[in-house]
Amino acid sequence: MEIPTDHLNKMSVAEFDTSKLLINAARQRDQRGFDKTLIIDVDCHHYENESMKEIVEFIDDPVLRRTAQVYSGAGTGANSPFMMGSPGSQDVAGRVTRYPLRKMDQTPDDDKHRDIHLSLKWMDAMGVDYVMLFPTPMLLLGLHPVPEYEVAMSRAYNRWLTEKILQEEKRLKTMLYLPFNDPDETYKMVKDFGDREGVCGFMVVSTRYKPVYDNAYMKTYSLIEEMGKPLAFHGSYSWNDHLLGNTNRFLVTHALGFTVFNAVHMCNWIVNGLPERFPKMDVMWIESGLAWIPWLMQRLDNDYRMRSSEAPLLKKLPSEYMQDMFYSSQPMEMPHDMDILEMTFKMIKAETQLCWCSDYPHWDMDVPSVIWDLPFLDERQKKNILGENARKLYNMDVSDRFPNYKPPV
Amino acid sequence: MAKELFVSKSDDLQDGDRKIVPNGNYEIGVYRVNGNLFAYQNVCPHQGGPACEGLLMAKVEEVIAEDKTYQGMTFNHDEMHIVCPWHGWEFDLETGDMVADRKFRLKKYEVAEKDDGIYVTL
Ligand code: FES
Image 1 (cartoon, each protein chain N blue to C red):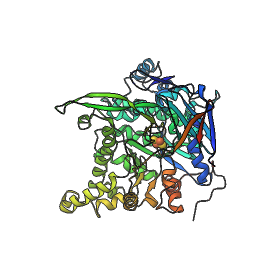
Image 2 (image 1 turned 180 degrees about the vertical axis):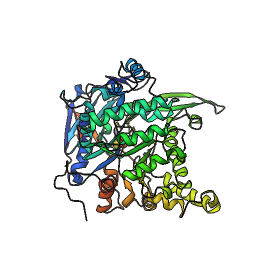
Image 3 (image 1 turned 90 degrees about the vertical axis):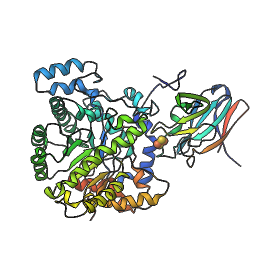
Image 4 (image 1 turned 45 degrees about the vertical axis):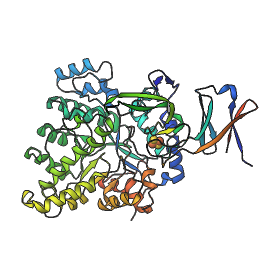
């Protein structure tokens, strides 16, 4: 395959293998003894569009299914009425080569789904034991103008994912995609799929225009709280958004997009007193990095002290509610001055609330060494962030990978 | 005495070519560009990616007119960049400096030609 390197020249690549691309990650794994460390990745992805032909067969509505069948023929999902595109350049215009070369990655021709093979390749290279697997193009489905399409596609995806992928490979798990634009269907999804094997929690993609405080969601939150599984908000971007549409470089669209949508939902979640209404529910914020949290903590506390009458359900400062929540680490900002990061860890109580994630194979992925090599963490803190916090959060049985594993006392 | 690592015969590394050679636990990427040889450890200072296995690309520059208006972008082939494939960090081929933050750099090796061969000094 040839990748253009400028307007005149191309670089040709004969083969691509994830295990080879990640050989330095495997070396890090061995140097740091990750085989003895439980590593749970709370956010990674696959490209469900590559399996769209299979997924659409799970759409219940015969008319919608037939429509989806027509548009999934090419297997790209690109022009499907079920998928929302957004302009973007996640692969930094081909510089992050695993995007254009992905199709060349060879997997064994056996009974296992290619998605399972591809996931295990990078997990093994990094030394990751278990993952929460999420879709990719569907991260924009919450922007679809018709809720019915989000419902049909996400139900089909969740059936396919749980039956064809998670059931087949115990190291792959998910926090279930919720069609949040339709509150009743969101409730139904939790009810119908919440107890399926491999479903460790629930996930709302933040990039949408639905406020989390709407009364229509309260029965779903109650149900999730009752089930004892966490609810996550997963960041994403949209260059079509009116505010982000003012940015002309994807660098900014991404840097803001992945934080702003989560920040809005976080504010609404807190000032409407949802932590007080659902005190037992664990809430997690995914893929916004960490730097936004100290900013929002300070900003909300400051305003709340002046305007507490607008948030009468609160019994403590917004930042204190934020300290009770869980955060995924990636893409973790790496300031030259480590004091800044250390302070961030302190502010979010990283020792118990932070969970490492890779976001692999996406362009701004993190390897486990970003946590392991931090100079201000001791070994127990590192192990908590890399796996123990997630194990506790999901109440996860890790005996498949670690038959003799005993949780630290 | 410094050890030398044989890279290839001179004829086997043509202008524009790159060769990755094993060296202990890691590799060294050797480039011949515009007649000059360069060698770097194949380990990115960001998260350890195989920087030398990525694209070699010309620097991108912005075209700003006299009146400060933006007129588009262009490639500057006088400054070539090694682009790490893991996340896209770019390194100046001549110095190994990370172009966006020169506090970071690739580990550079001396590389020279003798007796029709190319050798890296370790
Ligand atoms: S490891 Fe090289 S760019 Fe991140």
